[in-house]
Image (tube, rainbow, N blue to C red; front, top):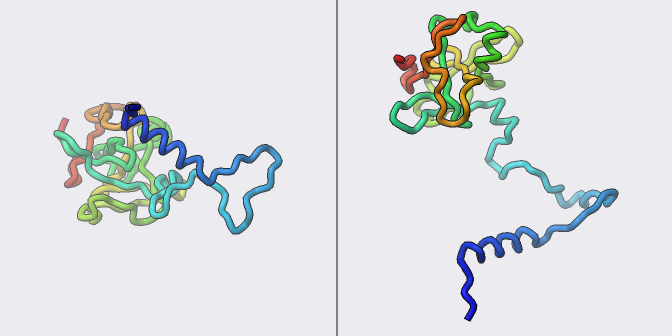
Length: 173
């Protein structure tokens, strides 16, 4: 009697299924017929492409001990004290503190009950800066990924940076 590990069997089945219907094409082969779309890396219907996610950032709330705003990738979002009009963060500032930008006047928010807090303000370059309770939102370039909050409490030449509570207030350091 042969015993097969369930995980190994699942991998073999998945590999076999993914090979079904695949045609090998080499350089110079004709493109697929017009009635059959070419394979793409596009996400499934209803999911945003990376470009769409960049255009329409999702502002949501982190999970954990200290809830704060994060973007769709889980990166912490910050506000700069006294920067309600966005003028305190110049081009050099934006290198360290990339602004959260949108192409749409009303970016998507999850959970949807928080949508009243999000908005946009015009930027000098013609784009839109995402705001939370009227305050421009930024990421911190030195944050090292999801869950990182190294920018919280930073004092630099532009001022004092803070995480943002779901209610819209800067979180005390």
